[in-house]
Image (tube, rainbow, N blue to C red):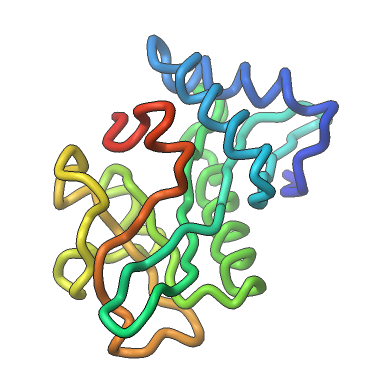
Length: 174
């Protein structure tokens, strides 16, 4: 398996991954990925035998901490073709996303997802660490964070999602 930056030639394959992974919501999630891509986040693919089998976007968002705004990362969306799930593809994409967040100097990486899946990849419930969800539509258990280099205890507050999530009504999308 190869994890690499998405190229323009991958766009159709990435849309197909989201459609297959998210079923009825696949077109909506693919549209979110397309819109986020335009804003310059890291967009990574997992490739097996020359075929794109997974995709993740990790982009800059803000943490509204009491002293000041802090740049943080959000891992969303993440998708793996059903035939390649439970084979380490998602785990590899999450690890690559964490590395991107580290390289960009973000002190935290947030995710909205299945708590069992996310906790096995190092994410902890954000609410218990002083972080607030950007929307009440996100179940508390699904709001996770991993703290990275540069995190300081004063860095708590409300996660402010990229405008794309709001414009496409993708906050709390399950």
